[in-house]
Amino acid sequence: MIRDQETLSILLDSLSRFVRERLVPAENEVAETDEIPADIVGEMRELGLFGLSIPEEYGGLGLTMEEEVLAAFEIAKTSPAFRSLIGTNNGIGSQGLIIDGTDEQKQYYLPKLASGELIASFALTEPGSGSDAASLRTTAVRDDDHYVINGTKRFITNAPEAGIYTVMARTNPDIKGAGGISAFIVEQGTPGLSLGKIDKKMGQKGAHTCDVIFENCRVPASNIIGGKEGVGFKTAMKVLDKGRLHISAICVGAAERMLDDALRYAMERKQFGQPIAEFQLVQAMLADSRAEIYAARSMVLDAARRRDEKQDVSTEASCCKLFASEMCGRVADRAVQIHGGAGYVSDYAVERFYRDVRLFRIYEGTTQIQQLVIARNMIRDASR
Ligand code: COS
Image (cartoon, rainbow, N blue to C red; front, side):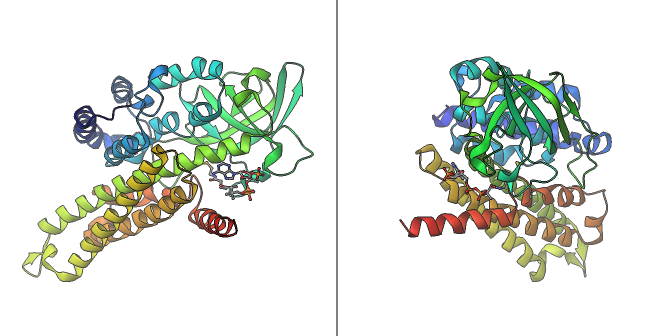
């Protein structure tokens, strides 16, 4: 936990410099090769980026949520693929352990995640269960001191790189919904665990997803998160509350980058004898984008502070994810429009960003799921 302004400023400045000097110049290479260069991964490790939100006692930087979103604003000003590599260790891959893990589980895994020695993945989604996460069909059947896992997980971010997977599976087949689900840590290399081929995505080259397949995969019973059956769905939901705030901050940073690119282009590009930035119709697109980014930034900071104050931010996290991801989509669209024909060709980063940011409205809960969570919580609170 930093909490003192000077140390925080040093961290944010060094992140901003790293993004500007190392990551932005490597964006095209990552897009072309679909790989993040090994020397950059090494530098990310050295900067402590894999352990931003892992508590200090386990070797992380232990950032508060407010500090984490400030860091995320900076990291997001480049291709989302870089953020994606460190994102699961700081977010959905590790948070199940941090929030609900036993002391032994935390002591064993978190230092390895904080250093970047291990990458963690979050395996909730299945071929037949996306938004309706509680209907998942992967099973985990107790057999002495092990569980035997069978099923397939889909679109799992960082699965090809992962050393451990947080896997949600049904331990009680008699309970069809959330109450029958438990969360496990499964290590890569466990017999019966295999990976599908890497998905060919619309964007985010350099960030990899694929199926994770379990066929009679035997996992020690001690690897059930928190040592308790039946609470895995709640663990996943708590993880997503935090993850949704983090993604919202990423939406803000990415939108800032696209607007920055669009503004620079508008000031340089001349038509009808003057820079297009002088035209009020272009100015409207710049101004609307600026106002919406400011609104999203303020929302994310407010929700992050509330989480740090231990308030339940389920509603606020969904409000942020809903607004910030849709805002990011609108800014992407305007940024391409301001670039005109140049925005449709790959010489300018905005063409790539337009495709990359489309995912923000979908993963960690679609916009429609955020609407559902917000409205349900409103009705629940009003009937108390
Ligand atoms: N924190 C703690 N507990 C939570 C919670 C939260 N944020 N949200 C729900 N729960 C609990 C509920 O209180 C309920 O517990 P009880 O049975 O003890 O009352 C349990 O979890 C089940 O919740 P609910 O009944 O709301 O579950 P539903 O099946 O109706 O669906 C949604 C919940 C749709 C919100 C959930 O499935 C969801 O978020 N889907 C999207 C999944 C997603 O984001 N996927 C992205 C994959 S990761 S990239």
